[in-house]
Image 1 (cartoon, rainbow, N blue to C red):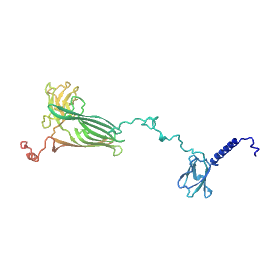
Image 2: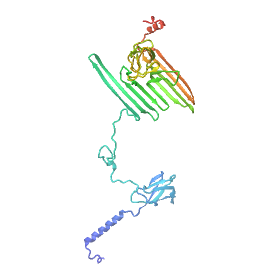
Image 3: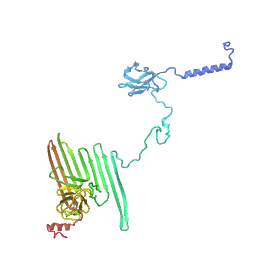
Length: 411
């Protein structure tokens, strides 16, 4: 033995022994096999068997030393997940399987993404475009189109006190829901005069209304115009303020029912003037009320002017112009006035005496070639609601006792 190592130096002998010891220590740290065995308590429909992936086909489950049928469970080997196809067993199981060196179904990252800091400071991903946020609209409503303006002004002078003027113009249109649409106009210019009657089309200075409608009905609240229904026996044209509802129904197949109702306050009273023309004088001709009132205000757009039974057209380039505030009509050169002309003017005027209310109900039932119509219209003064003056109980008693004697109706 001594002779076998003869010729090898002592330092080399120690180096060889150290290398052999290092190799033995390395082999001692490596498991001798990848086979694993553990006890399982199947208390739920799925179990995590291991932290490493399982070699497919290597899993065997035992219950009381009897192997379970593989059809009773499903193994996801790369996730090391055991799933029971039916109800899990109630007893403790013993599982044997082989594992891989790593979990193939896991997620591996070189760095934690939560530790990443955006370079821009306002976007999480600097390589993904994000539109900038717009300032929120205070009146933002999806599906509605809004337009208009509002202004305030101060008026003062050396001969008048300080006053404030305001104008408002707001228009809304669009859909409130999938079925209901809205149309609204709010215009208040704080102007005590009306539109001029020297053009064919008019635009009211003060117009406020809200209209909700669908394909089968409409509801209007505010200022609107009541026109004659589709009937030969009832004719009217009224500027009103109130509530109006119209609808179209199909009570049965082949029938159409159109119904409507309105409750409103009339803005004016109807009048009809027969004017005697003066030879060669185109005007102006002053209109009067039903009681002979000379100073009245005609509601814009309510007049109809006839000469010899033919209706005329308003406008400087047409037949006549009208001043609604002074109730005067002037004819253009298109219609020469003579003493033989028969001039008739129908209009509505505001006398500011009493509040006038009206009720309108109409119904039209169409079945085949037959049509049945029913129209009801009622307009009256509110005797207890005067506009220009308020009477005391004593004054009302004097008027009640006066009867038809105008001389006794004095206070």
